[in-house]
Length: 93
Image 1: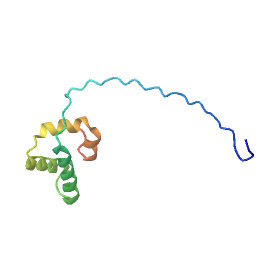
Image 2: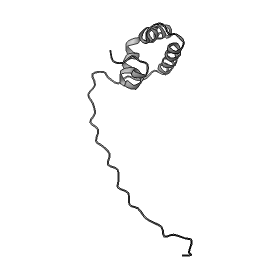
Image 3: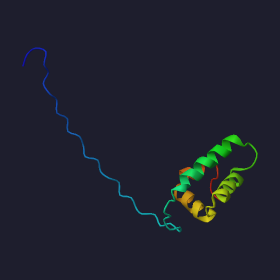
Image 4: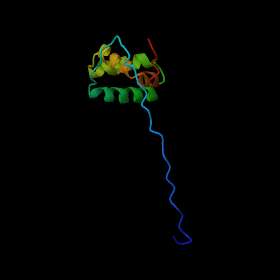
């Protein structure tokens, strides 16, 4: 080795252990997401931004009615994705 080169240092890293996750038993079955659910979320977000009157619940119901999407199925989809439910400000019913 010349004066400018360093010896390579080898560092052993510990292997990551995967945490065993227990499957949670849910009362609601898994809902297959409809491609229009993303459009519903976008339209709801735009309505929430544009309209200051009305609750998020009313705005969501209006968007679902205009798009003819069944509300129970969409709510089941939102329940599976709790972060979306919180982002819309709907929380838990």
